Length: 344
Image (cartoon, rainbow, N blue to C red; front, side, top):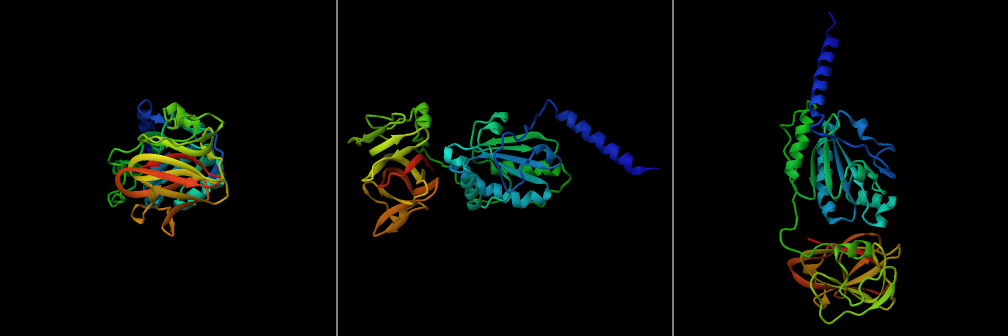
């Protein structure tokens, strides 16, 4: 009597029935497509080749504060569950042009200690086949390649981890000994200024024109003067600035400033200096930023608060007590550009 083939056929029949039940109930996970770069993995990585594993696909971009706050959970899950059948694929879909650069993404992967595979979806090809619209957005794919769960944005970490364990248990792995990851979740709890964009292709469709009389004038250089009255939650400029599609670029070597009346407990600026480190001075309510309000990227010299902009990324400017403040940042360099402010 040949027992092994009978057992195999029985298991194959059982799995075929499970797959048949999933058809029509769950969506088959689309394949990675149009990938331009691979980090922590070989070229040609395919979800279909990971059949028999649980796969978490995470759409992210490295200057997004919401994405950044999810990364500690993802990196912990990868370490905790990779030997039990979990694979994570970070699909890096850029919001700004500088996020298409391989080395910029590689630096971010190293900074955030990401060990799982990351692929560059520079042309939004994988984003499109998933019909995605958000950063971050997580999809959980089971052993047979079906999307069994997805979550948009931050939060729901316990819920997501429970689903990971549920799908891993379907592989025959016992999960009862695995308590959930315990990390601090810091999503904004209070009303705050919305994310504000600088580039005209991002700002104008969102109704986020700057507050200066001249407004954003695509591809033109304007010498802006800040009005006496600064309205809430609107970007104002001082000095010469060029309006580009995804950023505003300083044009005045004497002094260029950004003024913003915001409400939040933390402020970040997405900025670049094109390889030439520059100093960005920071004032709150017309005074140099104080130590108790300093963001993680703030430095001090003779009571002057500043940031060194030396690579294209998100910089934490302010981290203090929740409230409404007037922020002013000033540079004396023509190599300064900024893409957005984020809060919380």
